Image (cartoon, rainbow, N blue to C red):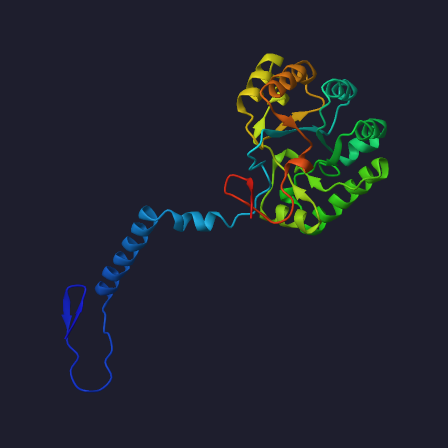
Length: 266
C-alpha cells in the first residue's frame, strides 16, 4: 500500500505497478506543484535573481575604493559651447570623455580634433544616433565601424567605448557591441542638463549624487552646462575626488557586472 496525496491506492497482483491517476487527482497534483513553485519564489528570491542576472548590461559605474569618478559629454547636434567646455576643463586640469556621433564628426571635425588635442577621450555615440534596439546585429556592427572610422580619421585613435543613443539597449545591442570590440557605457548620475535645469540645480544634483566610481552624464550643447561646470568641478575636487576619463576608471582584465550595472573585479 502507498500513500498518494492522502488517498490510499492499491496495487493488486505481482506484476508491474502503475500509477493510475484520474483527472481530479491531476488537478490536485497541479495545484500542489504550483504552490510549491510559489513558495520557492517567495522564500528563495535568489531563484528569480539568478534569471535576472543573465541579462546583458553595459557599465553604469565602477566599484572603486578610491574617490575616483568620470565626467562624460554626449555630442550629437549643437556645437556652440564645445570650446568653452574645453577651456573650463583645462582651467581645472580635468580630462573627460566625449561620446560623439559620426554625423557630428562630419560637421565639426575641427572640434573633434580640439577635444583630442586637449587630452580628452573621443569615443563613439553611433554613426547617426539611431535607435539601436530596432537594428539588426549586422546593422549595429556596420554603424559602429563607420563611426569609429570617422573618429579615428580625425584623432588617429580608434574608440574603445560606446554609448548607445538615447541610452537605449537590449541584450543583442550589448552582445553585438562587445563582439565589435567596444565596451558599452551608460551612467549612474544624470545631470539632467538636457532638461534645461538651472546651473544651480545641475550643480546640486550632480555633487549630491556622485560616489566613488560614478560616471556622470552631460551634453556638450545643453543650455546651462558651461555655467554649472566650474562649480561642479570645484565641489568634487574639494571633496577629494580625482576626475579621470572613463577608460581610466573602468577595470582592466576580467570583471563582472552586477544587477545594477556596477563593474566589479572578477
